[in-house]
Length: 65
Image (cartoon, rainbow, N blue to C red):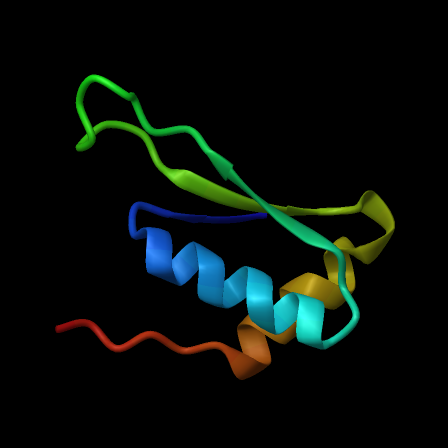
């Protein structure tokens, strides 16, 4: 649903979704031996996907540094 390599971004997305009433979890798919491989994924219930995508699209922006 939402993927990132940056843990803080996954947590921010999860927190905002939960503030809006969408149940979300962060799934860590990073390789434990090599932190540069893999990513974190934010997942929501199937019946909340469209709501979550709309929230992410409309309300969440990350600036690249």
